[in-house]
Length: 264
Image (cartoon, rainbow, N blue to C red; front, side):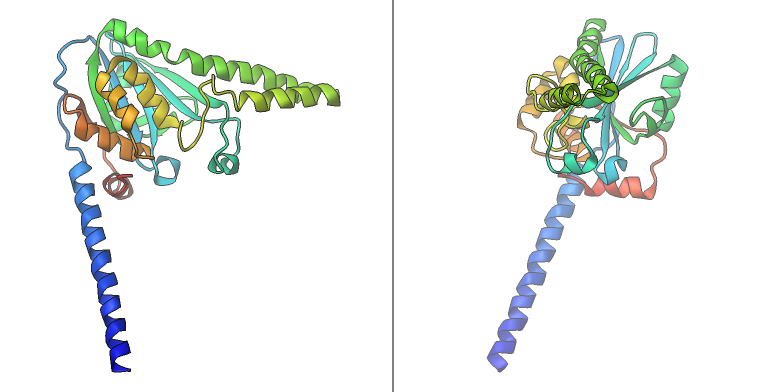
């Protein structure tokens, strides 16, 4: 009996020690990947590119958007999210056509947003508070290049909306079934920029658009393994030292904890 109790206590001690070691390793990674504010060391460009995250978006996993600022200081934001599928279908891994929201701001509104983090625009995830951004200057030509990346998303959304309207208003059952089949086929067409919550979500879209003018981000995208917007922004910030890092407004305790703890 004594030997059995001794072995049990030793096993419990090993488990506690293992948990302590794993927790210590995890906290070290949290500390090492949390980026401190810094200025961008890029020198060329009259426009600006911002890769931003709302730390407590999507139930604490984060939500990413892209902000383009032209040489007059006016901003344009892009946000990608699911549209065709329900949350349950998304979580089960089904792909579908996404909602690609865009919004524009005056120079004053853009400056205020970068100070406060508060976004007040019509569109999915465009009325919310954003917490951290990576940024760099870009040229006018690069500005246009990033802008062009939005076209496939907007075209897919428009085509889906037209087809969905036909399906919703069709009274003939046979024709309605044809439209339903066409909608399903669109949601599985790999030639389209589909939304898939695990592999092609808001963060993938933002990074893919920005990577059109940034080789470092393109290389990161090719090897990224983090699955959350918070994790990817932090991981890329630790690699891309020429990008600037900034916080927007005042973060709540929840936002600070999420930004610190989420590294995957």
